[in-house]
View 1 (cartoon, rainbow, N blue to C red):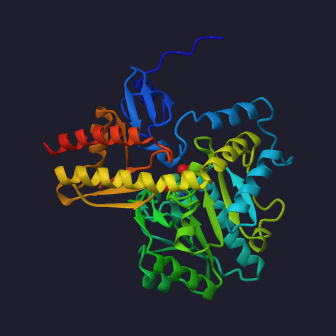
View 2 (view 1 turned 90 degrees about the horizontal axis):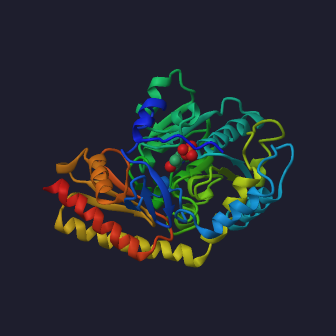
View 3 (view 1 turned 180 degrees about the vertical axis):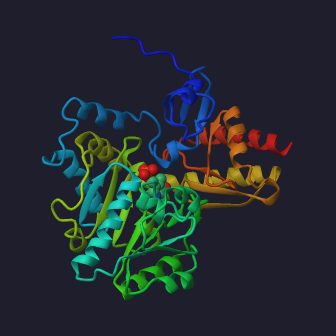
Amino acid sequence: MEQPIAVTRQSFDDWMVPVYAPADFILVRGEGSQVWDQQGKSYIDFAGGIAVNALGHAHPAVKAALVEQAGKLWHLGNGYTNEPVLQLAKQLIDATFADKVFFCNSGAEANEAALKLARKRALDNGNAGKNQIVAFNNAFHGRTLFTVSAGGQPKYSKDFAPLPGGISHAAFNDLAAAAELINDQTCAVIVEPIQGEGGVLPADAAFLQGLRELCDRHDALLIFDEVQTGVGRTGHLYAYMQYGVVPDVLTTAKALGGGFPIGAMLTTDALAKTLSVGTHGTTYGGNPLATAVAGAVFSIINTPEVLEGVKQRHQWFIDGLNKINQQYPIFSEIRGGGLLIGCQLNKDYAGKAKQITQLANEEGVIALIAGPDVVRFTPSLIIPEQDVKEGLARFARAVARICS
Ligand SMILES: *Cc1c(COP(=O)(O)O)cnc(C)c1O
């Protein structure tokens, strides 16, 4: 085989559509919660590919599932079903409120399916005017035109007008504001139990409970976007379980594939029949390779050891971050659930989240931002204690530098 050509970070600027501004090094290998770049420098991975690599890099059981399936069957298209997709569907159904699953390839696609289901369901019920969607400021639901319009960050949607209509936004965690918008013309309310991209902002239990009641009163579907919070991220299999508020539709992606692209929309029998044969679909969704990998990921995460371990790791992070903040007071709040943690920068450091993560890279740790003022951590759910300690020590050095 021909040798692949040599590439550098400059190649990105030369050849890639400039829609991202990646770090100035290239990672080439990962194992557990450590990754290495082209120069062999090691980093502790506190980002987990944006809440995706829930079992770290190259997990042996996940790799084995991938390799085994790779030798059998990769793809068929949805004219033919397959064993891994049905097995994963049953795993999801047994573990959640859902009776039926629709598979796709990303979080945006899962939300797209959920919103389309809600509109069509109202239409099928003879209520064509019941097409309004209520969403929240600062929310993030993906980048398709429909989902980016449902998202509550106009900076992501405004350049693509005309946008799909019938979507309105209320302030997050403001039940009275939501109640003003939700009425009999509302077909769905879409909400993240913890706003991830918007800054790691947990919903209040009373807010979600109130939305449930409003949806029931107006026969609207309550859609929980658990693309970021799902599959163990909060120390519960899905965040709705901890809130005790059951949605009508739940979307899940990111951690579901542990790094292999997959998304899913979960719902009830009664609602699932809305999407009858031919009314929605995807070429790759539910292909045997993706679902075999996700099945392995899911069966490891959906265990008391892993879920309890997330709560323990949450405490390691909170303790370590509090200690850093005592020495170098830069955070006004450290919040979130499980291993979805956001550190709000105080006003002296406003706008510096990106700069902090760049310094963190230099010190050998990978972290995320959630907006300009929040440093976010979404590591592997099974990150070893030693890596948490070492990563926080490196992060502390980055914080020391921004303070000096
Ligand atoms: C990441 C994310 C999405 C979009 O998922 P993609 O796989 O990028 O399409 C949607 N909703 C939430 C809450 C997310 O965090």
